[in-house]
Amino acid sequence: MLNLHRMRLLVELSRRGTIGQVAEALSYSASTVSQQLGQLENEAGVPLLEQVGRRVRLTNAGELLVRHAEGILQQVERAQAALAATRSDIVGEVRVATFQTAAMTLIPRVLEEMNVRHPDLTLYLTEIQPDSATSALQAGEFDLILGEEYPGYDQPQISGIDRKMLFEDPMRIYVADKWKPNRDRKELADFADVPWILEPKGKPARDWAETACRAAGFVPRVRFESADLLVLARLAETGHGATLLPDLVWDGYRPQAQFVSIASKPARQVYTAVRTGAEARPVLVELRNILVSVSDRRIDVVQ
Image 1 (cartoon, helix red, strand yellow):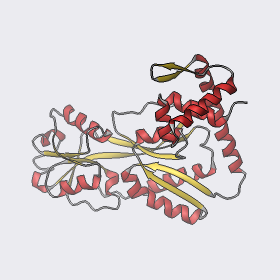
Image 2 (cartoon, rainbow, N blue to C red; image 1 turned 60 degrees about the horizontal axis):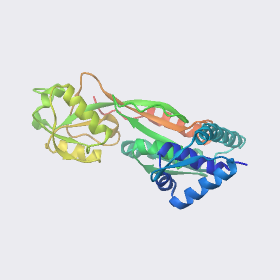
Image 3 (spheres, helix red, strand yellow; image 1 turned 180 degrees about the vertical axis):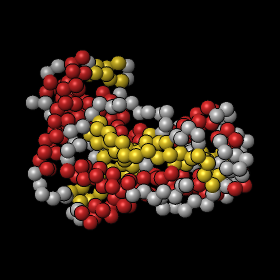
Image 4 (cartoon, one colour; image 1 turned 90 degrees about the horizontal axis):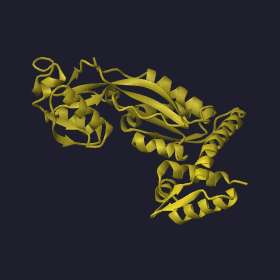
């Protein structure tokens, strides 16, 4: 009989490409993963992997088993969800991955509501980049992602992931009076000569910001970089340059500089994602409903 856990390792290998990456993602040693996959081959009775140089790749039989295993794992998720639905209460643990501004603004309110409604439920939270979070969700490290997607950088639809949009979060220029916003400077192109404060290279927000600036006819002169959006905000407030920030930053944080809305009205999408088959789990249904409720009550301080 094929072992479910070993089939999950094979699926992860098909997604990640190397045994080392599977081991790192699931906190195993590479030798343990290799041993488990070898045992799966014995159970299957046919070769599932073949050596190519120093790496391995799936055989045709391995790819066939992966396709079936993905469906089986989804059915297991559905079975677990159905069993959980027979309970009259929501208890246990739920693991959530999210991004910085959601962790600062939405999650505290979610925790408050969960504590009132379901005091025996424990929520674990990790701040993580959405691209890393998706693979971790597939691997079972998290139960739900509260993620973000910047305009023009649509993430590919991934098999086995159930994703729902939560809300759109407008992006605006944030800059101190020193740079005369809304008087001499009303559009993105008007800030071409201003120093810029952006997230580090390689971050989706940075890629989007540079693309938006180039579309406006200039390359931003980036003097300051930080992955902490409150650092970007503070540097802008103290007159060191302009930055581009989502409105969610200001939910619970009083702005001290000026906003300039961009004519194209760009907005990032904030979404939830769970594994396909797990979307009916009562705790995830409840968590998604609470996130909708909390999101609808966001404080709008940007006029």
